[in-house]
Image 1 (cartoon, helix red, strand yellow):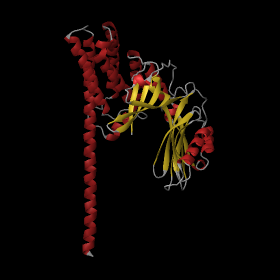
Image 2 (tube, rainbow, N blue to C red):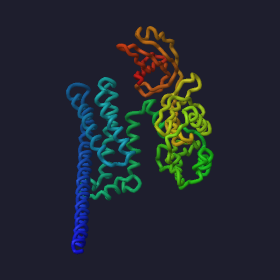
Image 3 (tube, rainbow, N blue to C red):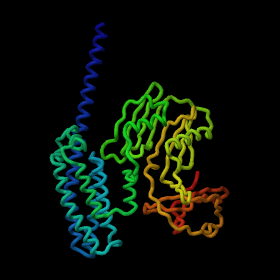
Image 4 (tube, rainbow, N blue to C red):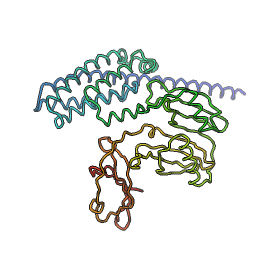
Length: 428
């Protein structure tokens, strides 16, 4: 009995020592992390001042070694600040726009000798210098007391959480975005990309919570009677949507429905599933019935993958004039092999519809375009991005090539107007 009591006391003592040891280690790790954050903030602050000086130096020269060194300093310092910023748990929106601004500034300084006249270069750098002075002042206010290294992790979180912070990080994000757009105007493709990201191109009327819930019930009657809650997305979200969660004894999951238009953005359910025996044609029918009921009627089948329990279908939007597939506008649908029920949907890329422009279609003689050993097996039209991020109408060719006794199959995309090869990929 005494031996048992001794062992019990020893175990309790050991657990206490272990818990204390873990607590000390966690405290030490948090302190080290706080010190590291403080150091990175100090580095960013100091280099921000150096960057402003380097930008001003570029205004001294038109050409020569002095000009070259100043531009290299701008590129180096903007890169250094990005590294410091990337390691900080800053507000994501602010971090993104600041990194973008610094990247543009560094790239412009390094490449402007080939792309810009001295007058244009000086005009850009003059604006950048004024922006950096304002940014430096706001950064100093935002990070006051954060460079001391004496903050707890809870205090750090409070200062960096965009919703509870004592500093307006969203306001600073807006300022830096304005700096970017003023000094480095968005290209047409970047502007289009921004519109896609924020779903500004959805012009349909907004739907209410009740309408979103009704839509859920019509599309998924087997699970929609087990709703746990319905909440709107957070303010500033790139996807304004209603988030609906559901659960019962068999299934748990969620569905996101856009506030404008009431489109299914995504859907996921988890439930026990066997390997299933349904063939792909019947399961595909279930997927395409869902797409039709959900209003996604301008898509065509692209490909299918499978595992033991489900088929994963990919559908691509088809542009009506040329019947060309828009490769960036896709919907993924996951369907159970067991009973044909929809297990998952991702329509985000489809909803962010690409902006398409028509273009000439130059006839191309593929026999002279390709090597004589290449055979064109299939040809269709698609819209695909070029290196500048613009959507281009392209010939999509499946070709084969005899390769040392074997046959290689390739997918080649060729711009219909310029004959530029946009993409080449070997098929497995």
